[in-house]
Image (cartoon, rainbow, N blue to C red):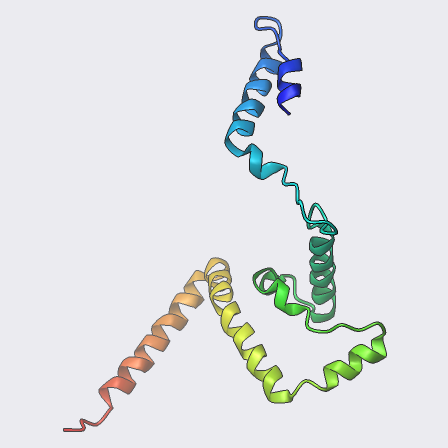
Length: 154
């Protein structure tokens, strides 16, 4: 990049757009250059994570297709832990899935639902603020009633 910066020097008056672009690129290079073009010195390690990102992209599309959800936000948040099985065939995958204990599945599903709750709340608040506010007020009233009706232990 340094050689390119030395080679490409736009001339001021007639090349204002090129000069502005060069100035912006050079500034960004000085600020973020080392982080932009990362080279790994480890043999066998790929120079980027495009394959991994493509895998998670395929998983998100597949999840959206089989679940009917429009959003796969939870897969963005928990992407790496969604890949739990290594299988060469669908039969082998089915066999591995069948050996997951039901209680473990339900526990992890509840954690996923719990993590999804804030996003769903914001979605409902954005789409229907009156109904969401009314629901919050009803929940608050129910909690106040429950607290007021707790017998004193003294």
